[in-house]
Amino acid sequence: MSKLFRLFLFCMLLWGVSYLIGLFFFTDAGVSSSGDQIAVIPVQGMITLDGGSSLLSSSTSGRAIVEKIKQANEDESVKGIVLEINSPGGTVMGSKVVVDELKKVDKPVVAVITESGTSGAYWVASQADYIVADQLSIVGSIGVLGSYLEYGGLLEDYNVSYQRLVTGKYKDISTPYREMTPEEEALIMERLQGIHEYFVADVAAGRHMDVEEVSSLADGLFYLGQDSVALGLVDYIGDKDYAIDLTKELAGVSDGSVSEYKDEPGFFGTFFQQYLSYSSYYIGVGIGKVLFTTETPEFQISV
Amino acid sequence: MVKGQPVLATFWRRFFAYIFDSAFLSFLILAPLVHPFEDGFSGSSLSESFSALFDSHYILLTLIIAFFVLLYWSVLECWLGQTLGKMIFGISVEGTKKKPLSYLQTLIRNIPKISFVLLFFDTLYMLLKKNNRRFFEVLSDSQVVAEVEHE
Image 1 (tube, each protein chain N blue to C red):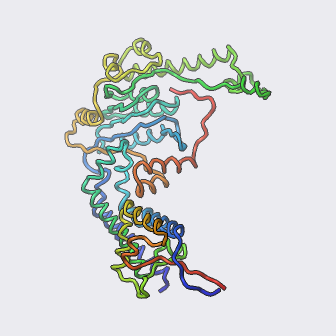
Image 2 (cartoon, one colour):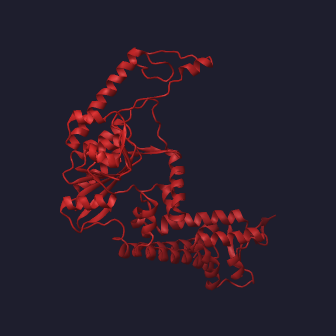
Image 3 (cartoon, each protein chain N blue to C red):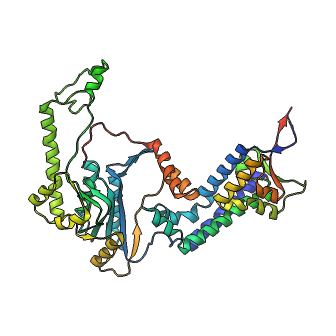
């Protein structure tokens, strides 16, 4: 028997034993798969429609969150959902798809804001039945952002000119290569205002508040959790455990287990996670994902 | 080409062989064991992951993984003189006293592999002594050699 064949046989034997041990001893040790459950769905980081990341920054996928919400809503063993939010917001569509999906959920939903739940993330939180936040959580910042860097002047200083060739006079609106005209600015502001009004209306409906009341708070300012209760933006001061207990109470479940709907780490993430320290794992995730960075548009509207 | 006397394998060859073996172990052999626990280690906070480490299932898993790691390296090095990674990088393990290696020798030389910290200091010994032999290799009377070919 050749050396390679013997090595192969031994490795197969090891794998087989590993598989059997995993199957018989550890299948139930991870995510609970039976009995009443409370699903905890993370909403972490910037929310964009499809997600993506580089070594220095990352965003979470709105579509991926939607899938988790759908899965939790369709799973009969899941009696309630906790949205664990730590996000500064994100793109309009990234947040909106999550908001729209939450409107379809027919189970109790509690949002818990940990560090930050602002802008699009607050839009998401507002669709929950209740919002829990820490006294010092950052909440609110209801508004729309479409700012961008315009460096036409800089190009001019270096004798670089922008050759404008467009069909349709607004085709290159918001291009960073030239200054925006007052007319263009007014057109964009009109559209931002449209998004703003939609955002405010959704928050008002989700929080059972008047649109005027929410509008008065929707100047882009953020609030601390301790002040947000009086303003009607948050219901309770508490943490994740509090939110889970509240959800169990709403769902009428006393002994439900908690099922964390977390993302599977990628190839590099798994290697570093299993072999090196926790911090090295996140470095590994960043290095691995830098190969799959998505292009971000120059002009982007965020909530 | 004639096979010459084997020489002590260089640090980098051994390092890459080790990385390969580690990846092979992690992604293939240990994957069915570790998969149910991935959620626990990708937690949203360091304290959650740290707490998860003290769960009885994780402790048992850690012990089983250590056992598999020792088994993989010890058995293959004793039985075949090399693991898959060593085979790929053209190095093998042999005893220093011109006798076949025993399971006890390969077990002792691979003890540091169950702990990254132990392995680090074991390797540091090798680098400081500049003799291409880890401390546990000296204890177990073994060494890692590479075959040299010349005309």
